[in-house]
Amino acid sequence: MTLPDQLKELFEIGRHPLVLRQDRIRPTAESTFQELMFASTSGEDIRAFFAAPDGRSLAPAILYIHAHGDHYDIGAREVLDGRPALQGPLGQTLVGMGFAVLCIDLPSFGARADRTESDLAKAALWQGKSLAGQMVGELQAAFEWLHAQEGIDQTRIGVFGISMGATLGYWLAAVEPRLAAVAHLCCFADFSELIRTGAHDLHGIYLTVPGLLTLTSIGKIAGQIAPRRQFVGIGDQDPLTPALAVDIALIELRTAYVDCPKNLTICRSPATGHQETPGIRRAVLEFFKTL
Image (cartoon, rainbow, N blue to C red; front, side, top):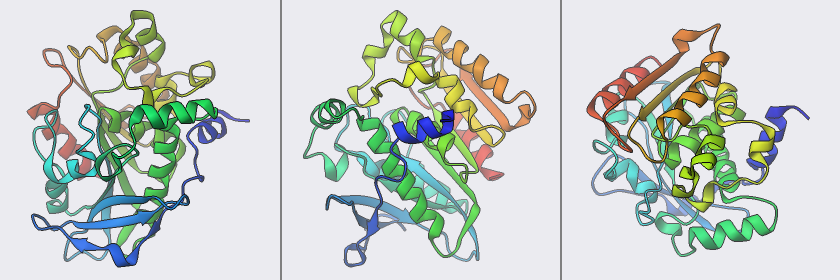
């Protein structure tokens, strides 16, 4: 079995189809986004926010993946309201640039916070699975829905995420070749080095994927995205991603892009930590302008 096939297995690709509930579509009061409700195969309702720009025959799209930050109440509303680690809400900005945007609540967040991360992660681990795997599987199903929408340019769909959304974003892009580009912030580092220093314990239990590091490394997973375009934003003072662990992952990632270095954008902020900076925000928007 190839590495991509092994990753698809761990990330539960194809196991979490989503069906839109047509009777649960409603506008939001504060933006052009609609609130959607998907049904999972287990019957769980999964809230999402979706917006498409006016006046374009075929629009590019962004699958927006929300962060963690111990703010279980935010979930998909990050696309509308932002969060402390961001410069401000990004969703409406992307719509104004001509993008369709979709963001779903991931398990234990937003409208799904009735079950805790610990509950779901431990139950999955007992079954030889992982909460992160469920998350990536659901995100791939969300991508399938977005990809199928009328008016979406299927060749120009990208991913954005910060922190948890970052990791899930490049994991998804590594196993979903139809994604054209990914921009991820504040969560790119070699996990073996994090374990060596103890920094892995700063991350949530959701991220524990049994056997992942016996197969490959974070840098090589992100390298599966090459030659497609990838943006890495990182703060060197971030305790969740110490600089040495970032360096190790970036060496592996740059190796994957040796034949297409212009498709890899790295934006490091030496003096900041686990947060988006104004410079990184500007760079991300420039990155997506050419999607």
